[in-house]
Length: 82
Image (cartoon, rainbow, N blue to C red):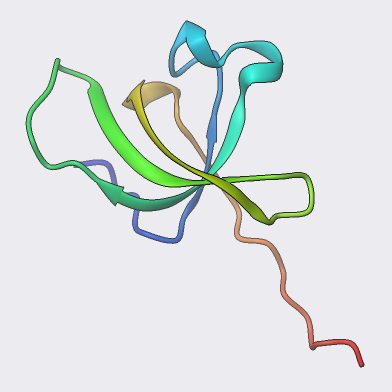
């Protein structure tokens, strides 16, 4: 289907839908992909919106064009600071 997996970090921007243009773009930590069929090339995604620090601030369900979604590299996690 998409090749994305729960836990992936996705950039949802203008290429996904005009509603996510400019400052409305968001980083989404993917939780699930709705398996039900929709319009060709579109998909419902559920996940957590991350802020600039990488913290989840809102749970969202978004309807987007698959071709516009960008998979971002996983952040590098180092040892915990004491």
